[in-house]
Image (cartoon, rainbow, N blue to C red):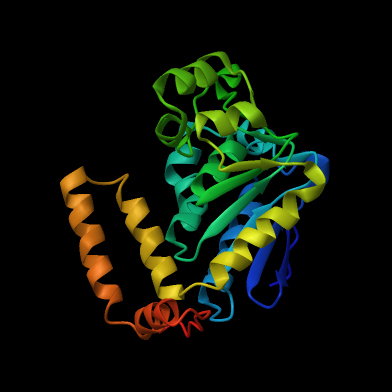
Amino acid sequence: MAYQNIEVRTEAGKVGVVTLNRPKQLNALSNDLMDELGVALKAFDADDAIGCIILTGSEKAFAAGADIGAMASYSFADVYKGDYITRNWETIRSIRKPVIAAVSGFALGGGCELAMTCDFIIAADNARFGQPEIKLGIIPGAGGTQRLPRAVGKSKAMDMTLTARMMDAAEAERAGLVSRVVALDKLMDEALGAALTICDYSRISVLAAKESINRSFETGLSDGVMFERRLFHATFATEDQKEGMDAFVNKRKPQFRHR
């Protein structure tokens, strides 16, 4: 499809890159943008050549929030009947391949929530994270009150949500919200390097590892460990397990065939 609110490209033939592209609105997450994002993510997920996806914005803003201009006129009936957020924002949760958020500038409100739905976040040193919805007389609605405490703990999540203060990149890394922080001019190189590393591993193992980690947030420890154990056992039925272990024993680089 012809995208109006995002840009899509591939790198090295195996990394899909989606760039949010509403610069005048600081990449505010409109319904149209989220519809397009879902289509692009699903297309990369279905493409056998793609092993990892990067989601990014501009240097000034990953996404400064949801589209408040559009939301201001909504009623309860509008958002409830229209299944607002659930209908299209949740698409990213169905993507099986790893999605890396490369965040620079503001990631506020829905922007912070969107970054948190990715599998991990690499932040530029100018990144700022926050959930300022309380200023608008509402609360986070795309998972902010649920994912933020899991990432940074109850106290910081309460602080950010109730006072609307922003967290800079250094604090976000210390708190566990982001995996690493790099200079702004190195952000995409770092994200691409991580994505290419992932692409070189067995696709089956990567999918299984992502599924297992996500399961840890949905179940108790004993059930989660058993789920992990069964996936671990299942990898022994793959050609890639045989190749990986043979390569290790014979001190050579494995050539994974994703089967």
